[in-house]
Length: 390
Figure (cartoon, rainbow, N blue to C red):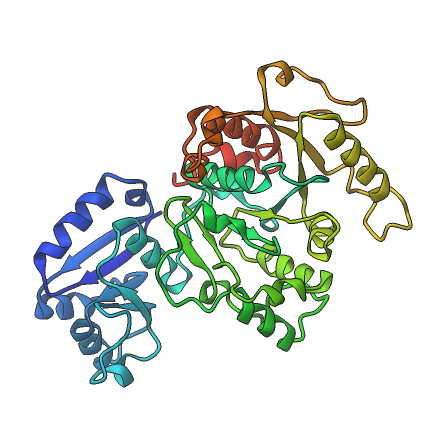
């Protein structure tokens, strides 16, 4: 069932393109918008017995409605400056501020988030918690970030709610993505507040920070993420327990189907936490003996009872051979490692300005799509293959 939204703006020409886009996009199955451009008709509707799931409008509309004292539903204010004007800041405090003029997908995503309005799923798609998938590697330059970003884009494109988490010391996703505008607080403040909340080692999200305050939306990937941390020292000081607390917060957020975790060096504490907490571990291998050998040694270490890692690490591991040439496409790997997917080498990526191509290669995208079907569909069968918005 679609969420019922009331939209109230001064300009009637603002409404028509928004409704046209809504009716011809996937959002038409998630939102039912009733729009008004006159204050009197808006107020008359809001006095009726049929309350919407959320109200979004220009300050003059929302303020007049709030004065009536019938504000029992979540609401947001459309702002041309990203904030309230000084004349009405007090009377409008408590609502969500939405930039009025932005891309239509971003605007509709903001409306979905008002009052925790979630994407509609089938009743059969119930799950205990968000699936955490860690992308790891025993050797450098294996293309973890390229794989992780393409997976996030693929899953977001089919309608899953996805969070991309980069745990590299230096977040290389900034090479691929243009950072969206906005004033989200970011991962630095979230880590601080997680410690302050005394959540260390606990489960459940009661009393913990709300992710929506810290995340930004990447429309090109159709997923949420944190802005790259500017202070290099913050990431270097992030402990294994800090990472576990963050992963626990993400796992308990009912708004996400999948969290794709992009890691740095496997020796780092952050990567060790990913090995421990993620439900699926996707090992990125290169088609050479050194990569295979290092991966085997790490798997042996993870299976050692003195490693400090849970014994199920090998069992929840999956393997993808990345940057594989034609001669390596059918390579079975070692007996201990069953290759679950093969991603091709793309010659154009050798060009000087190749990063924008890494998320737009049809051949690579097809390989990622097959990989997602093979390793994620068994974990989320009804969510992945069912009609998300039926």
